[in-house]
Image (tube, rainbow, N blue to C red):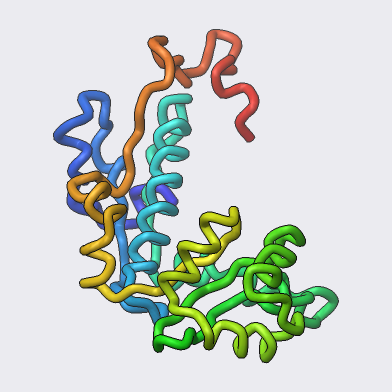
Length: 217
């Protein structure tokens, strides 16, 4: 949408750090606030910010290639729906088959803790059943087997066996975990240059086409 159709937003923080920033077209209007999903995490903000960042990049490439500066406006509610778009998918008017394996999902363990099992890959499914002592391959059978485990011990045993399972942790439990300490102070997203090469420009060539962006549609 051209800027003429929207009131100009406050320039983004990048404008003060990016000399080439053209100003308003690299700012986004973000509408709505969390929570929009039943989660302890800011999933709405994560969905909204990632969609806005991709749209801003596309708008800037468009501008550098001679196009009109465009606004970016992202509704958090719409972004969250996009991130759960599989819930709205219909095939010939009907719900598609469940993409999850029958025994995948959340379970309560004997100590009151909970684990999430990922068993979509056949070798993960077979390995988890083997770890649990070959119970019946049903949710009821797996739930009964897990009542003999502590959640954190199951997570550790699964990791040792090359399987995929995670114990659920509260905020304080996660803060005490070594992985939380390793992530402390790290930004949510880090971009590192993988090669010492100058970035190519996406400006149009004299023939009206940029080689760097020739494959973009």
